[in-house]
Length: 161
Image (cartoon, rainbow, N blue to C red; front, side):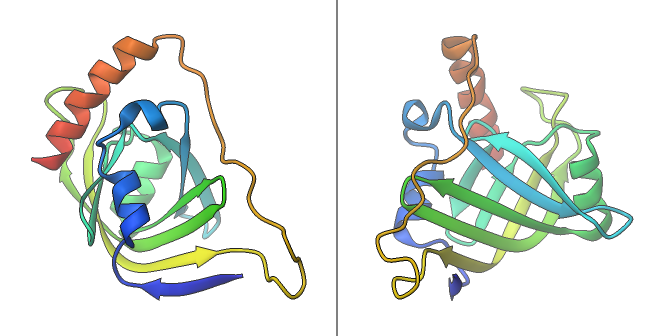
């Protein structure tokens, strides 16, 4: 059951999203959710190469410039980020502002800022599901690993400007 833990990133989540250790997160996925113009939840995936915490209250994102997800954020300014991995599940909710429609280092993506409003932690109820835990998060494979990490460093650096 998800529980509200505050209005800023806790230590472990902030450390995970700072972008300091890209190799550890190179194959992990971050699920983001917006609401489409019909009122339906709209999930999408980003990598740790496209998301970075500027500080405990601001998360920068680099989604595709003309995607449905980005257009949803432009339209209503709302976003939920789900960080799910072994033994952790966090949901970060907040308001999004577009900082730049086109990034210099990657013109096909936009630069957005999520102002954190709520951070929720989710875990199994020990009374009902003793010993249960999240075993892993969603992962992906990129055949351009080293080249992608070099590009990611440029994106993350520009997101933090």
